[in-house]
Image (cartoon, rainbow, N blue to C red; front, side, top):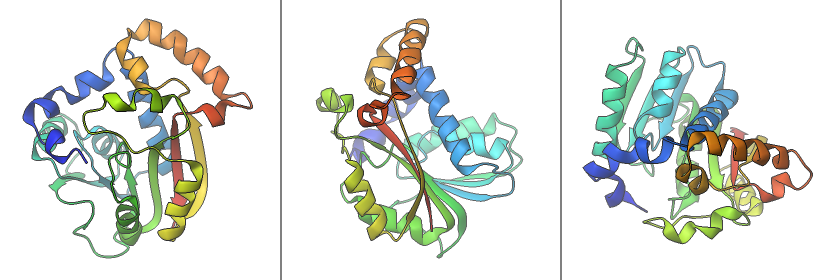
Length: 233
């Protein structure tokens, strides 16, 4: 889903400004926190990100001492990632490759950890991708999903290529089919990402505070639009 759209030069060039400016800065911070919390400490770990896009996470992990490979189908996105890597002090710890997440060009058990962010909502056949992630991982697979019974569904129609939403049961079946065991799951973002991207950061921060307080209540997990899944091989 969205292969052609994400490979357009203008989409790649505007990707981060469109999603992570204004209130989207809060999304960027939270996603990086989720990745570091799940994978850390990352120093000297061998890590693969599938669908690495513009390299937000691989560069961050390489800066903290991980040996990282980022793979993406989009040459335009990878160009943005390579530019980011050139401007970072990562001492050769990052390699960005073009490839298909459904057929990873690595041997079995090759990486300590494999993760994917903002990918499974695009996956028409999520089981096949998850099985490939599990195949090349020695220890850990981490990913996020957008949740079916949440505010995410309210603006799903506006996305240029649609979006796959998941219930908790669907993710549990996905893990079962890929022979992965759930270590931990976190649920977040009662308000959908699209709302935060539309408002200035100052206003978004106030809503984010209320969002987090609601998330800490008994109904917060059920209302969350995003889940972060940390699993073990």
